[in-house]
Every structure is written in C-alpha cells, then in structure tokens.
Amino acid sequence: MWWFGRHKWVVVLRRDGVEVFGERQDKKWWDYPRELIINQEVVNREELVKRWGEYWGSWGRRGDRVWIVMGEELIYQKEVGKTEEGKSQEFWDEVPIEPAKMVRIVIDRGDKLTLVAASRDMFAWVVEGVKGQGGEVAAVVPITLIPQGDVVEVWKNKEAVRLGFKI
Image 1 (tube, rainbow, N blue to C red):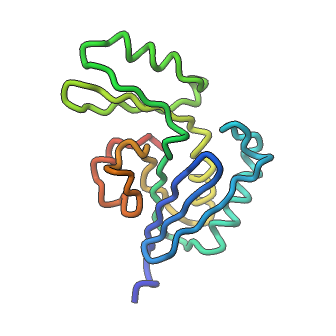
Image 2 (image 1 turned 30 degrees about the horizontal axis):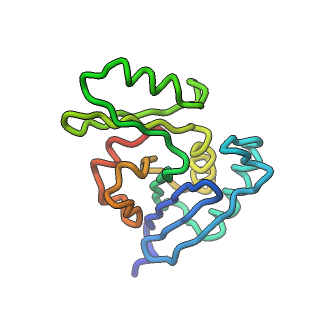
C-alpha cells in the first residue's frame, strides 16, 4: 500500500505563503507569519524554522522527499545573448540581494542565456524545517525551469533538478 515508504512533496514558495502538493494528497496552503517575513526578508529565521517545522511535521513523515520550487515572485531573471558577457555581470550587480545571500544559475538556451537569481534566505528555512522533521530536500528549482509552470510532478523533470539552485 502507498502509505508505506517515502512520499513525494512539492513545496512552492510564493510571495505570501507556501503551496504544498503531495504525491497523493490535496494541495495545502501555509501563510507566512507576517512578523517573520517582511518584504521577502526573513526577520527571525529560528522562529520561522520552528513554525514551519511544526506545520510540516503535522502531516509530513520521516524519509519523505521534498522538491522546493521558487515561484516567479521570488526570483529575478533576465535573458541575454551569449555574446553579451557584460550584460550578465550587470544583471547580477543589479539584483537587490546581498551577494553572500544570492544563489544564481545560468540556463543555456541555445543562442541565449537565462540568468536566474534568488535569495538563499527565502528557501533555507524550508530546507531546515523539513530536515528537522526527518525529511529530505531533493532540489530547489526556480519555476523558470518548469515547462508551463507544472510543478505538481517536478521530480520527473530531471533537467530542472540538475540545474536547480545549490542547497
């Protein structure tokens, strides 16, 4: 029966909260505590990890695998030509995230490159909360890598998982 063994979950981070899709579950929604995330800045990481961990632990199981998807509201992206080397650095410099907190990837799309940046702080607390409850985070992926934004079975998209942000 399916409830023995690992479950697969997709956690989509949005501007105001978290959407959770289970392999065999209905969609769930968790609002960010307004006092802990303000303007996409984590104000109290320890408390955020604690609250998310409690929420996750109320239905997630030890050994479950999680794929985190960064919604379009939480990423910065730009497309540049492969020959426009200066444009890439210009983009990274313009992203309003401290360099030490920024994660970035470059997606090769033939004659163009798609540059994607996000704040590590906006997903690290999810990773920590899931791991604290015995779960495993398989990948953190920007929604840019998912065709038509179909996040429900992101684990089937090997290319997105391979190119995702480093945890």
